[in-house]
Image (cartoon, rainbow, N blue to C red; front, top):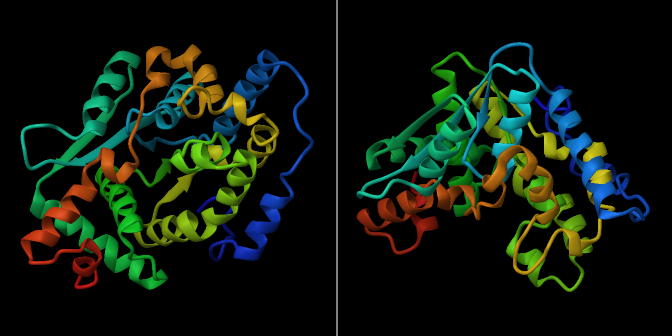
Length: 295
């Protein structure tokens, strides 16, 4: 399923912790320009070593992570399709659909997208809950993010595509969350977040991938890339309320203005969280979790 997942199942939580601990290196002492050059090399290498020989998909939102992966795959002559999904029940399209279309057109990516109505969204959410119940991950966040994965994967499966790239991991190694801004020690918060990914992200995505019969590759979780990125000073990652700055600076060469797009989390940018709220209210529930528990 993934180089960090064992053949017969998800890597053990303790082993994941050991793997992350083994990535700790001495702090980088070179110039920022030198760091950017090295980071670009590692990012491209991470994508290259995972590039399938056959046609594959990219979970695509128009954010810097998925857009950089797509740009790298194009540069490396990969045969791929970008897949974007969202929920809409009013006139305004989901942000991720709007941005995905704009970016794909400008940068020349093949894009397939689907906007789900409320009934279709309910089917996706229900399927996601049924899968994640098996690993006890039916909280609102996991179901919201998981629904985006299921929806995009099913779109790809209709094309016979079973291999997908995901931007998972970028937020942790480049300090992309709000909690990084608030942390007293940004570096330690990044290390803590990486370790917590096992419970927060890997269990969910492994369960979904296994059930759907797909492979999810995550180039931002490449061991060499983690090792180097985590040696970089936090002031190169967080600058004047901007997050993941050094990644965006490197990506700007490939993406132009799109490297600087501010993006919401997957469940919000796709509006699947809004679908959960709407469905919960329509069935008489005040709390989203209460409604999810009935599925």
